[in-house]
Image 1 (tube, rainbow, N blue to C red):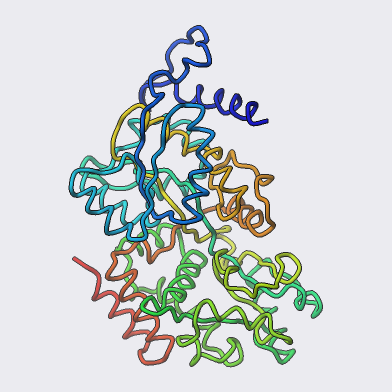
Image 2 (spheres, rainbow, N blue to C red):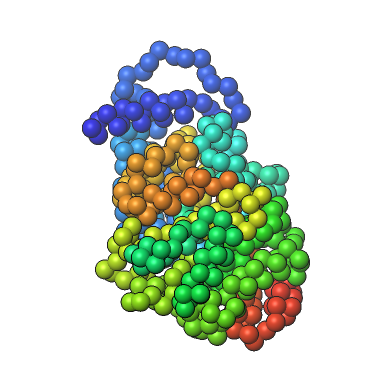
Length: 441
């Protein structure tokens, strides 16, 4: 079976790699080369790669590329670091970057692209194949500014979805509640739960020094659901102020849920002091103290050990407030960028533009593929498969906004001021003006 897989992957890669650059025509077909000679030019070469994957994630990544390494003879030497952001800056600025770098935050990659360090994939890869394997939003988010103009700065690898609402399925079904598909149906469900004497939402934004990030996720969700993608992009770029009608409306939409009496377990006063990881556990008490919790697919690691996906809990897509905006999905994930241009590095990057590059990781669990050629049958658990469906069915995707903003805003004033607003120590006017004032020139 493994030999058959390698043959099929070989045929796919031969078609993908038979070019010298993204803008050049395919060479005339040549007589088939012997199997042992297909990768003679790159066999035995090394591609150095760095990123944030450590421990089990690093093992899953390395296992996912083994078939490619065996077929091509390219040794992908991956080095993960828990201090990735600091170490990669030293390597790149010091003139000794890895060949490929995995960035969990595209904003950091954008900084290096703006300084001219990043190779433009438009000039090195077969972009026809790349563009055919992603929806336009992924391509938009990989397009960044450089000293030479706009470039394709990276390729999306493993991703995850955030626009998910988790619930206690067993109790939900027993109560006769139905999964809402529209914002109006979600509002009706909230009212039904409250009329039954219960609390709709479990919410917590405490996270130590990072307290407030869970609130920023909600604001980002509402920006995607109440205004255009263009406004979302302007907002994260600092061109649309927090003190604007569009952003204020998104924040007030969140507040309309969180601040209403009886809507959140513990009330507004508890949100800023409840840990984001502890918040959903009240859904599994008997009887449940809250019924829904919005968070990314990683949150299941904070659920009680004895609950089972599909039986004890499930999730649904957070509907759009404005149906005309389609089905946007807030995402996070990893984008691979190229820093050294050699044939073997091009070959690895072209491979990363295919679902095959994450198939092994998907099957091992913990990865969602953004590639069109990936298959739902690869997913070995219901949660990952359903998250993949949500992302595949998205009409648009956008990366976590706070991760795209300058650090002093996205991981600074945005977190801090939203926490102050939620706790009631600042008004919305004071909070948005303080965030705008913190934006770097």
